[in-house]
Length: 457
Ligand SMILES: [Zn+2]
Image 1 (tube, protein in one colour):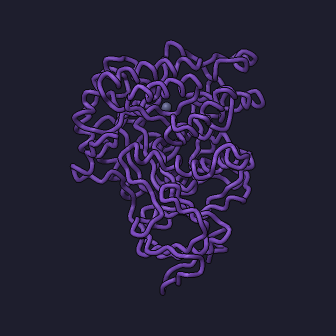
Image 2 (cartoon, rainbow, N blue to C red; image 1 turned 90 degrees about the vertical axis):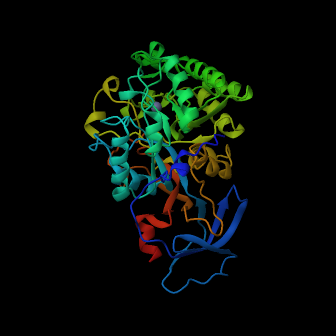
């Protein structure tokens, strides 16, 4: 992977968050599952001053004076999740989400770090904007937040940002997410600058001349509903193009939110050729298809890229299993209620996803035995390494970045509201299995499920 670690080299912390009191907690007898250390057994886990201080057989550790005792029996303790792709809508769109509400949603979903996209107002294309945003996150963000800066000024696709300066100011990488880098020469130039300043180029792949005014996947359902379609090739042809450019420039690219079988194939081919390419997939593309839109023309099911066919969904699951797809990312995209309460054609693209990511994938893919739990847990934090961030591990001496989950607990999405400011969740109303009970991020307890908070006391 890319050896460049501009943040470490320049003394800028890659992630920022507000100060919170470090946790002193003994989690007793939870089933600890950390696919990276191979731990898969009931354990006592002692967190002292925000660090994992001891692991031991159930009942072997004593809670020190003043430490809180959490009964983990029958629950799973996992390394916290890391999301390389969220929209926190700050600055400029605080009516949709803000640093506090977005990171509250993250904590409720078991996420211990998130990376925000730059399609804000103003666009995060300038070091001054980035510095003030990081400053705001230092007082508002409940879980550590990192930022990707724009590849092109104003996301207009024409002129590159000052990438080196942005990297100096703490940008983890660059993306024009929401839009493709439509001119090949601009992407080529960005890859050349990447050599100097490091950081990944995260790419939203879409050929606008093919996606046009499409509002859903182009296929039998769009034809039946008489809605304009977005063909799979609008994504896969751009991936093939950008993989070729990255290979030529020996640069490193990360493909955002894969949605189609052809796209998985394009990534697999590029990897086989030795291109430095990684890819992510969202929980909604792994678990839902365009058939859901036929059942109810619900604007919460409208996102870009769109939900595609059953065959596409299966290819994404297979790609995740065989390693073609490196990580799960939510693409959490909050919108205000009135923005989504319009006819399907007019609604903005996007679904929220932080609070439902684990439960959706667990319910639809782990419970039926399609994917192993350990693989899903690993993929939910694999985005960290792709961005040069530390991967959460459950081992003595590590900063506590954990989530405690009841795998058997069923809950109805949205029934008791959302932590996010937005309600546009594509899983709204569904019964999911697997509930996050508590989250420890950067050594502090940042979330307790309401009922659990009472019973834990
Ligand atoms: Zn996107």
